[in-house]
Length: 405
Image (cartoon, rainbow, N blue to C red; front, side):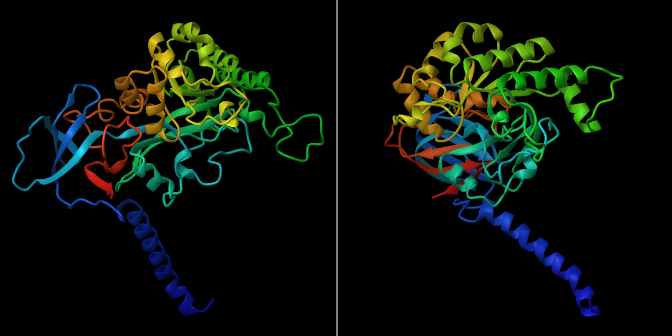
């Protein structure tokens, strides 16, 4: 390499860094914010769904510094406030089981025990997924690692827009108590692949969880893990790290609950396709459910879950009537809420199931999930009632800034 190339190399690296910074900035700002860049905004709506209180008709929200500072049927605003008028306003939608922006498959598949995997590191911040989420009114997403490993790693929580989108990088450790970790594995063959290993069935999944947590409890054991992995496993046992269990069939849900009971943690169940088969037992467990199985598709293939589970349209209504704490999660959440109301879920509960209850699941209800004074200004403007199929999203506000039309 000649002297000229050596001297210009740092400059090339600097320019590359600048281009990357500009690209990320463009991702969160190009095409939005659509509103004027002022610090104070007054949003006036014909209908304002606070979610944790009454519906205001009309309603007004005063926003300053990215937070809601006043709320009511009529709010006095300073002269320099930007006024925005919409038909309908509701809180930002929260998806607690997303894969937004995940590059590749968002997992470490070389080992079955990788609780130290950071999902945040696998996110492509330039992914189109973020714009699509904003188009659907989603302001916050919990991104889960893929379920190809039994101990799959940490979920993270991010905003779908903004200068600093990361809310938390270690929201909880995901356990795949389902058939997913067995999908590629095989046994009794020549060990010419990393997939010649356990587990190869559901019993093997449970065995790996039990054996791993049991070994982590032995202080003098010669453990085959890094110090970080051992710390995380110990944190599961002491309650320092919350546990997210992906379980869909009724027997997997029972297994996940029993594992928690035996090892001193209370899992949040993600999936829950066949929870309707064990409503009383699930309620007695005290666990929270993130229900991802509500299909809005009537095709024959859509009525079977990813593990061949038997799906039902009326489960959210039954969960509510049974007093089981739950939220909806996955794609098309506004459509899910609309569909749930047709099969027994009260309208106010349907809105809470995609806003306030997800915030409670994330233990972030003091900041997100409703239009309340002091909370973050994450809002969605629509052309009409949120639960009417003819209503569409006009724009989405994240931290006081508008993205969209």
